[in-house]
Every structure is written in structure tokens, then in C-alpha cells.
Length: 365
Ligand SMILES: *Cc1c(COP(=O)(O)O)cnc(C)c1O
Image 1: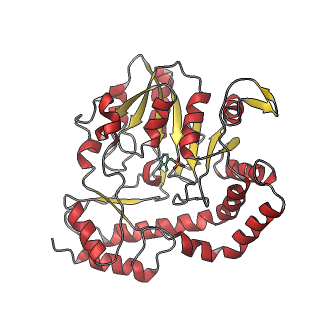
Image 2: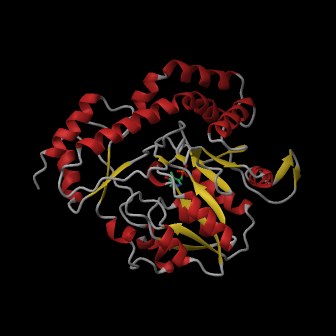
Image 3: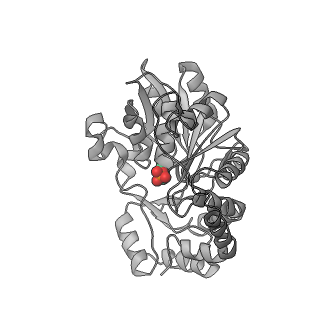
């Protein structure tokens, strides 16, 4: 079986470093806070070209805390692209704001600038820019719109560690950026983990306080916060894995280029488009076909596992019945039954890739 994701083979390739890192954390009882967390925060801030990094419990917490740190007036509208993981919108409602969906771009699947513009009202306060599948959003027009309408930009970078917009790493291009280190992400921990990055001193300070019971030191709570931490074990593991991230990303890009070259002549398949200004880190390689379910079954019958991201667009989920945008004429609402994610990642061998392409070329529905 060709795996969609293979965390075991990745672990095997760095076993010695990981085992040593885990052993050190345990022998020093550096479980919460402490030097391994600080070290990773510094390394990740540097890597993402941000002034500050705050480790938190997971990517969903990172979004909620980032939104809260912006101190937006309660009940304001925040625009979220219609194709993403539910955390991108859930965090908006959970922090007391109103989700307004806009469409996605049919070429690179990130937020559609024209659709976004059509959704702005006097009550709009912020935009969630999801760098979906590892492809950065078109940030210049977003920044321009944000400036014109006085909106904040939260970058959801859960799928985009190391991605670049016009040569600049994502995360601190807008006001604040959030990351997930869920095991299957491009940079994944061995459990839950997340981070917030920003260049803004105040947002960094407030995010850190919100994530730590609203305090600056042990019992000095300036306001009510919450408990959301990146723990020492995860931080130490992430420090080891961060050193390998660029080579893993290079492998993803090579595979994507191989797919783009070798699948281009197959009828009925729409390949993803990478914009010239993008460093796309290919968290996912998503194709589109009217015969999605048939193709997925055919690949499974040929021992190739695939995924669907995401099978139901956010506005069409029951959870968003209240937003009443499920029948809007969005590309995202009509293409969710056409999306198929092919295997991608450094675990795939040349044989695997040749196999996938050969089998895909033989499709007969
Ligand atoms: C994974 C993901 C999240 C949430 O991250 P968790 O660490 O699982 O909470 C948020 N946004 C997007 C786009 C994601 O893919």
C-alpha cells in the first residue's frame, strides 16, 4: 500500500536525534515551559522571519488566542474562506465574532480577492487568510484591502510552514499568524502543538498572557486567560524536526513537479496552479475531477491511499446552517465533491511515484 502519510518512516530516519531529545527533556523534568520551549520558540521565530513566536497547545487555540489578542469589538464580522478546516471559522465564532464566508480561488484554492471584496461591510473587522494546502494567499491585495477598510489580517499557516509570498515567509506578513504542529502537518509534533507568530510587541505580549492565565509572573494575573501551552517534549521534538524541514519541503516540491509534469495529459483532471510569486510547500497536492469518487476507489483498489480536503465546504456544514451561505454560488461550494489529495511527502520513493503516475494514466472509468 502506498501511504498517504507515513510518520513511522520519518521517525525511523531521525530516530537517534529524537530519542536523545526526548530522553533529555525527561531526565531534566523540563515538561512545562523552560529551556526547550524557549529554544524552539526562538528557532521557529527565526525560521518564519517573525520577531516573536509563542508556543501554544494546538493550531485551533493559536487562532482563538490570536483573534482575542487583537481586541476586536465583539460581534464584528470576520471573513473566512469557504474551503478550509473548520478551525479557521470555529475560532471566529468561539471568540465572539461573526463568521462571513467568501469564496476561494479556483487556481490556487486560497482566498478569492474579488469575493472577499464583495463581502466587506462597515461591520467587517478582520480577515482569516488561510495559506491552504501550503500555497500562500496573495498578500499584497489583502494588505491593501485591510489598510483601506481598517481590517486586521490573521494568517492561518497551519498548512504552510516555510511557505513564502514574494520571498517572504508567511506568518508575520499580516498582523498575526498561527501554526499547527498536529502530527500530520509539514512540521508535526508527536501530539498536539501550535504557535503564534507576529512582529507586533503588544500582540505578542497579549497572546502570551492569554495563553498563560492572563499573567506576567506566577500569581500576577492582569486578566482572565486560559491554559494553552506547547510542552517541553513537543518543543524538543520540534527543534529536531525543524532542522530537517527544508529538506522535507524540497522533497514535496520535487514530487509536486513530478505530478504536474506527468499527470498533465490525463483528461478530466485539473491540476493545482502555483502562482509565480509563491513558494508552495505542498502540504497537500489537490487535483480536481468530476469523477472523484470513482478515481479514489480505483486508486484504493490499486493500493494507493488518497484524501479529500475538504469533503464538505464550510458553509455547507450543518454547523454553519445559521450563516445561510451553503447555497451561495461559490466555487468552493460546488467543487467540494471534485477534490482529491494525492499522496505527497518524503516517505514516497521514486518507485511509488512512478507507480502512482502509471496507474493514474491507465484510468478507465
Ligand atoms: C490543522 C489545521 C488547523 C488546526 O490545527 P490543530 O492543531 O489541529 O488545532 C487550523 N487551520 C487549518 C487550515 C488546519 O489545516
